[in-house]
Length: 372
Image (tube, rainbow, N blue to C red; front, side, top):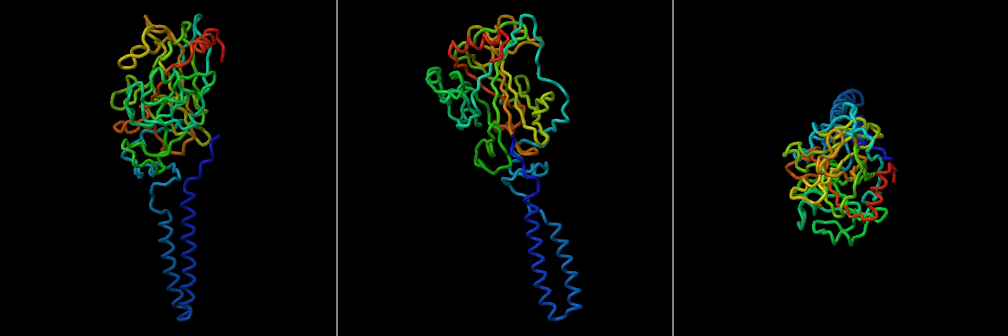
């Protein structure tokens, strides 16, 4: 469960009370000196002055706002923060209760569909495996992503990873799954850290409370094994400027999974957590483990759930990432600077480094309708 969020304004109220007590002490000292001069007329005059001072102090109980580690849920505070010009903006958020009801696209399974699932349990990156690299899109480059990634699975993943280095690496996953799973971190933008980042990714990294990596079947056919070292990306890290053609962001809140927002960060009620859902393409061309644009060797199923002609259904990866975040519009996903931390830019990456034996087990679970 998320730790209780401090009530907004608690810190300011305490400071205001201390200030008021100090004022009262000073007033008592002033009165003692004034009583020696004139205990009646002068005292009445001073009381009037004290009332004016108290009214002035009450008008200034809240000190000037500045970046603080205490999260604030107010939209005005968000606008006044040092990160306001970097994004995200108040209009990038929506109360999840104002989002229309609508599930993720889950087509109806036909007679030949594969209904099973396999979950690879890999933890939540408790070992803090982070870097701003992407060996799929920018191989051999440090800081090729210009935003920080969380990694689970393979322990060696960085911008210089190869098939050979991944195969030799350790893993955080059960069953010896050496695959690498990674996504841009989510940050608390109200915490004044990482302020010198050249790419504007300011704030405290929020580690996911829960990470679910589920492989699912196809609605109209059985699935075949993924080739080892298959690379797949989902979403578009530059969707805010490229447009939404490749965007696959899906945001919701626990307890509200029947409400999905694709282009807004969800504001969840107290006790509810933010959820990022990232579905990967699952129709393989049958030949290539990668392609020039990292997209054309795999595709998403059609509207009815069937794979396009000439492709084969493979297990579909769905990442579900659950976070406890500060109340209010105070969090954002890491992004390229020009993307302004727009929620539509959410994306993720995967490279299959399962052994053939494990992959065959995954396929068997899915095709037999089992939950493994």
